Length: 344
Image (cartoon, rainbow, N blue to C red; front, side, top):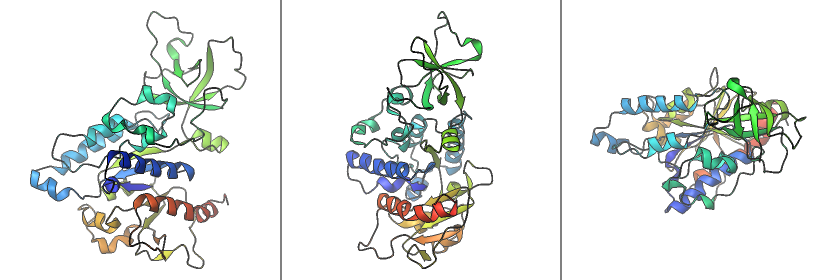
């Protein structure tokens, strides 16, 4: 899913902003979303032009920082809090991506890893208000799981290491660390597959293997959280996806959608990677009007997507807030999506 950073604009306090982001994160976890893209819908562009801000500089920096998020091929869910802070807390007069405080990635990170992966920051002041995701990868300390999220620890040079030069030790939220067969940089988040026969409490460490974050879902059908991505424009949301060949199904949501889920025969065609895009306070159309790279008016927004959908045609309120739209859309589309991929 893709949501604009301006989604927090209508929240009057940091407490409410925090709760709002938590609602989106919870909806994403409940309906097993793989990726949350936070994009700039351009609401601050006019102010930025007056200040002399150069969008090319911002794009170059964004590309560099997003690339840093993917330095590990083992886990695409590397914690992006520090990178997002660099973007959102810039002292330059730039149109900010409206940092969701705290970022969705904070909520996705298992509680036992947050101290190691996420630095203290003012945006986390009200993190205690967030409802936990309680997703399968948020494994409890005494609970056995074939997979665990962990962070590579740094061994002192003088300490003996059974892993040797070719391995690493990983903190996985248990009393014993995991010993993997790959040498990885300290502080890196990694998904570890644990060996089920390794149950001897006398051993000083678990034995495990570093695997891709997609492995738990692909092999055991376990939802393993979402990754986060930043996009400077709506166009970059669609063009900058992590999948080879991009998204083969894109859905835009709007109260002016051409199709509704109440239409007789409504369905979703088969796909491999689907993207659902949500607009901000003024809708996707306003985001397109502010995106100079798209070279189209907002009135033609429907041409950017494979499906242009009205998710609540009989709404009783003049507007549906983005956090409400996310929950409504994912709930109502779950059936058509599962049928499209053959899991219904």
